[in-house]
Amino acid sequence: METYPARFNTFAHTHTPQPQACDTPPSNVQHPVMEGRMRFSTRAAFAAAGVALALVASGCGADDGNGSSGTGSKQVEVFTWWADGGEKAGLDGLVTQFKTDCSQYEFVNGAVAGGAGSNAKQVLASRLQQNDPPDTFQAHAGAELTDYIKAGQIEDLSAQYKEWGLDSAFPKGLVDSLTVNGKIYSVPANIHRANVLWANKKVLTDAGITAAPKDLAEFFTQLDTLKAKGVAAPLALGKDWTQQMLFEAVLISDLGAEKFTGLWNGKTDWAGADVTKGIEDYKKLLSYSNKDRDTFDWTDAEKMVMDGKAAYQLMGDWEAADLDAKGFKDYSYSVFPGNGNAYQWLADSFVLPKGAKNPEGTKCWLKTLGSAAGQKAFNTKKGSIPARTDAVAGDYPAYQQAAIADWSKGVAVPSCPHGSACSQGWQGAVASAQGKFSSDGDVAALQTALVAAAKQYAGK
Image (cartoon, rainbow, N blue to C red; front, side, top):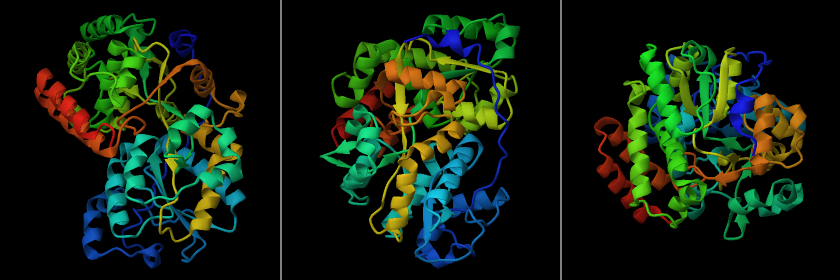
């Protein structure tokens, strides 16, 4: 695989910034457009009140996506956490294609803001418990779906895969990873890469840094240089899942791609000395990050890079689209130091919930999602690459062209915080352990908690 730094430091940006827009309040909140579709009890409505108030406070208007206020079987409520920036731009592109392909149906925006779906998953869990599912909802492809499958909450889409030709349009390895006991339950919209290091080129240049770090040792040296040049927090970091992403990138460097993957399938021991080394390296990286990281979302950390208050941020490649949408051009990107050709993948996917009010409309959405036109409309704005193998690289901006080439040659490794490696229960256990570690820095306690989580959730 061609190394990232050779290409990434010379990336030229030509995108026009995308306008920012507010999303509708979550669909389980009383609202003139959505009221006819609500079956929530008072208790469930209060459970989502915090998210609703946050959206209302931000000044978001009451729009269902096309200005219509009608109800009935023609509506397709699409539940996502794509509420702003490049994510919202990607959703808008997909919706435009849906309105062309499925003009007989009406798109209803059920987005709930919150990075990686932290808020949306809480609202969705309440809705599913109340037997009031949206027509379709976003979920990470892979192990994360096992919770919904075991609960009997989503439908088998294997027949649709054959009908729509998705079983041959998607690479066999991806189809295999989506298959559970011979059945497929979701349609992926894309492939994202998690282990990407983003940088403010001016901050690096001012510090005399001219190339991306090749390994952790060189990365630590650069971070020391940046601190000496007056950058107080050279590595911008957020809370929760953003910390898990950074930790996993360090583990990939210290363990290698195969042994890292083994952490999730039982072939690598979480109690091993190499994991201890990874935790120690991660702790050292935290010392270069902002002290208020536990109060930041990923976009807050991204703003530190944009504002020149930090040099680096580890984040998935949705950052490319988000930076472009915000009009920031002076950035570079590289694979996380020491990760080599490991391509840490995740995929945004959609499902057909059992009890959906408009299953035929949902199938039309899913068919559009998996089509070549739908994936192009979505991924050119989202910053990810299409899951289909027939995509034309030249149709995409520079980052996606590089990512398409690297995906075809790299070593795929999964992500726990983004669902391709572990279940939601396992995600929660890791998040809790790492949240504590962010405060106390207790290496032994974190490793003990990770060992316990693996014993509890592996294979479930």
